[in-house]
Length: 310
Length: 179
Image (cartoon, rainbow over the protein chains, first blue to last red):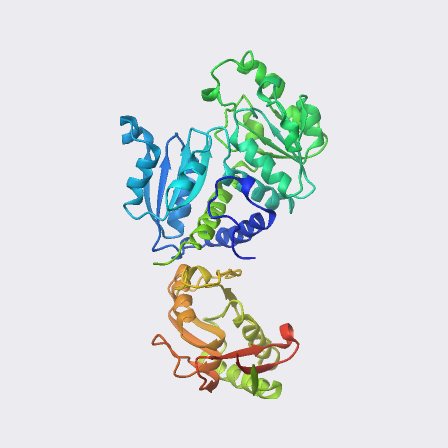
């Protein structure tokens, strides 16, 4: 198979296993490309991409922009904080205005769940979801699985625990879909207040003891505590959180085996991970960042392939 | 569908030896020369030539790279079938080297154009030559000609030339197919 089964990347939920395999196979080639002396290919030289970021982002935006430039696409950037959104313009109006400038593909991050689905039904462009509220962040989940595959050979059959704020995390939801699709065993671990009700219906187990969770797993994907999304206090203090769910060197050493530590960034050092863990050899956090560019190149390339030449 | 044999195993063997000798004539001991097979079908020819050069002419310092041109093609989004990439494996810099591209069939010349662009990612070669097993004459879209050619053929556009290799298809042969 050499074509995706979907027209937009709105979430992992819409993908099948063959899609993920195709994205990873394509990303392998792009990883080789971005390690050449000249890290650029001309494939998308007649494609224009708009990055619409209605919510702050540093690394995802940089990663997408770099991926687009490595494919030779023309790129325009848009941040809500500097735009007419502040003046009351609707999402469709903003997008249509940008499309009038002949944009072929939109990468969008938005604070509202479903914003990308909505946009995909109303504008004539390919849509890539770069995070919609607390819903999905598909490219992050893809690069996480890609990094596991690179480190451990495959995702199938591996035990993966997602630690932290599952309730507010789009990374967690996309990761659960992606990992289950590839045949991994998934557990989530965190304070009871930050684990959504009925999470078991996604086929994952819940573990409240961090040590037991780590002992069970091959990979721990540690999420950031998202203070900005918490209107109320979900746990008494950051200090208590780090004591109960933070991962430090001592805890890792007590496991008697080496597990892989992942984190989507940005890290709250001393809260979910101590510095010696974040900088340890078993942490593949910076590999995740490098793989992010290759995986995003693959996604954009495969979607752009479907755009009809006029 | 009609199928005509253009070259049989014996003829291919003779041609491969001639091409190997022509390479030696121009590149002596290959000190400053690198061979680059074009993915996917040029690799078989490149490896066959390497074997002959090593085993029969004792040339041992040969450098072979594999180049995939998928991302450099000019028909992206212009084909019915989606493109699917192969791996590129070039672990040397081509700066100031003599490069020999190796491919099985030269047709429109567009693949070679893409390969020339792709090659720039690995430095500025001092010169680039092209070796092909089959040169389809009068079918070029671009001003590109082979430096070394196994056999020149005149076939119409509706016909396809396919090269079979022992390693892949179980026999050495070149066929002209008419669908």
